[in-house]
Amino acid sequence: MEKFIIVGKNVSGLEKFMIDNNQSKFRAKQVYNWIYLKSVKTFDDMTDLPVQTRELLKEKAVLTSLSIKDKQVSKDGTIKYLFELKDGACVESVLMRFDNRANLTACISTQVGCAMNCSFCATAKLGFKRNLTSEEIVQQIFLIQSDTGLKVTNIVYMGQGEPLLNIDNMLESIKIFREQFQVGARRITVSTCGIIPGIEKLMNINFQSTLAISLHAPDNEIREKIMPVAKKYKFDSLIETLQKYTEKTSRRVTIEYVLIKDVNDSLEDAKKLAFAISKLKSNVNLIIYNQNEKSPYKRPEKNNILKFKYILEASGKKVTVRLERGADIDAACGQLSLKQASK
Ligand code: SAH
Image (cartoon, rainbow, N blue to C red):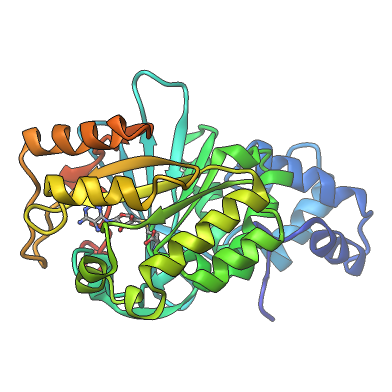
């Protein structure tokens, strides 16, 4: 018989398992605390459970269906995990520490591969395989915590895949992070390439985590060239939808913009972008293009980055430039391509 997978199940799922196996319902809560607050590695570590319950768990259940296949540590302290799923497929997650902050941010995946085919992104080259289940999404954080012994304080859905094309599992995983792992809604960010129906759904449930949009262009013409999704969901409709989103949720959105040399980094582009989002309640996060073997693009000159930033700031936006982490181990944005999976 298939073993029952524990990490990522909601409380009632685990309570049912306990009751079905003649255990008190209360054991579920104990197991939950060990998993979500302490991230123990084995059932034997759950020392306040009766031996008989631990034996039952060992016989009939497993903590995770994911396993750590490989792990690389960058010279800046960033760790990239390669996880193997039950069907042999792999996904990556990245754990980042920032020296000047107490935060520990994990970047997690929602799909095996990605179907969006953005021309600058290494993950796109993998193609799309399947959605992750909510358990598989949750297990990434659990395994990072049990491996490092540290508590993840911030979660970004910016790994492989398009979260809004796996929206139900994404939302279920957020529910578990909030209720079980006790990560606050405001410490969770979901990034999308601009799937309008997904944004509308989040708007209707009054989503309280941060929504980030990979805009990456000041107009539809440039956007279509680098992001095929713009052919389906047009630039203007996207901005309009975001406008409604910020009104309904009272939450500011983050506009992500990856600066690529001679593609979208001119000062004209900066002005156009400033104008396009002038009425949108938003902050801007500039990402300096990370080169990867499979794309011809280059990163912009430093001077250009500063000018681009200045133009947006002068228009009244708060602008940050994303700190580059883990580029030496291909863990930076757009570099998650399972390079070491075939080792
Ligand atoms: N599919 C979602 C989640 C991925 S987030 C989305 O598109 O938002 C990963 C972020 O890194 C996205 O903003 C993506 O556009 C960006 N990115 C992709 N390739 C990159 C590269 N080579 N350099 C810098 N950023 C890149």
